[in-house]
Length: 181
Image (cartoon, rainbow, N blue to C red; front, side, top):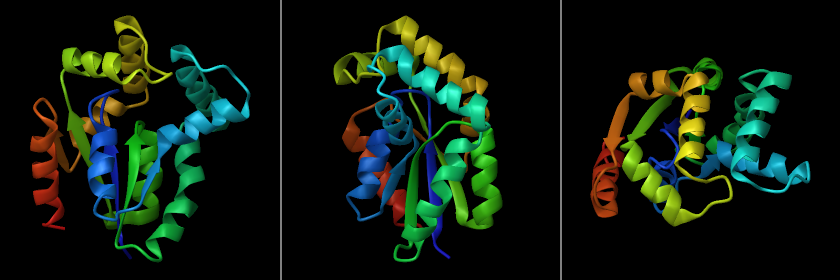
């Protein structure tokens, strides 16, 4: 069996950049955030900063905190048939992590990306995604996602990367780590 890596971190910490680095090496990526964005679109809800969190919370309330993990497992298994490593981008809850750990066992690893609130807010302002908003919106997202256990996941990750500097620094560190796998 191959290796499944899940990257976690607070909003705008650099999960997407981490995913881009791995994807550039040919590692397939499946995004949990994309699953929520697709759900918003399927429901025909106009995009706004609060909508994505509400839909993610609604899904968890209706189907359980592990709903996105259960929806993702088979897609990742299919990718593992032809790939040595698969990345899950955007792990946010302990219930999701538990599903993945139970399913893949020792072939599952968690990586955390760390960045300060100020830097994450600057990134939010520059990237202008529909789920982003002002500082209050970022703080609400932080609170919601830590409520799902994100802080525990970050704390217990097998490896953490600081993303406080230039992108090239993160690329260099992640590339060196990939060479050890």
